[in-house]
Image (cartoon, rainbow, N blue to C red; front, side):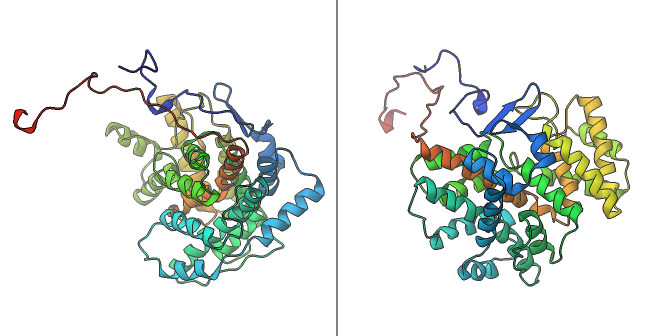
Length: 380
């Protein structure tokens, strides 16, 4: 019997407060998400990803000069050691982009000049470098696996525009740039989700930033965390191929006891505030690209599931159609999540190391009653 509690610990640590943090505020009952106290709706409508990075890392909005400097520092960091490109060239074509990203991020530590330092300023520098480098790795690997030349960044462009340029080989429209920029803001942080907690646990051992981010990426790869938007788009593709009515297709899935991905959330008991913006982005991109069907399929499914199951769409649901319309392949959806979430991961690693204590929880023991005794082999 456990000596720690009188009742069993909740599965998945649901509702357990594990630490204090000044980065992200969530009110699941009211559907509130805020970074450093600023509501996500304000940031999505008015901010940029660069400004959001500054807010997460430094705890306040930047001045005009500070924001300009942040953009310049991210631009300067958009470079990869030649060894990274060489290794990307040798990756077997069947390897998933998330596996590639996990391995390449670990390799980035080999050429990082401050890899051995966990000082606050060194970790800020590494956060900036990793944010630029992860976007480059995702785009470069996709180009290489398709037999296309790697596209170098343009220092005059924003982070979002550079990623689309490096990925698609052409300068994005202002609509596409703003859509991705907003998506990056919306995905930047979400408190102690599985990958962020993994990063903090790793950092708490006084391991390095790159190890912590590698842990986070390994966690994000799991389909219960980062892969739901891929599953959503596979449903949209199936509807498109078959010509089926979206609602009838989903009814068929439910009849087979299949879960509909992209709905419900462990924290939010009302609409995920990020879904509010992604819904609008999916609609606007579909109209501007002359391909509204992905939004229309999604909207029909959302209305049915909400009416039938009383479940709200979460951040993954409309990000699927949004990313596809931006020219992003389905197996890149989760890596693009990492392109954004690196800003939040690094903010949490910095916060952890600024006031560190080893994270070492206990387990509620439910095994055989103590004491049991060893029995000689011939008596068993």
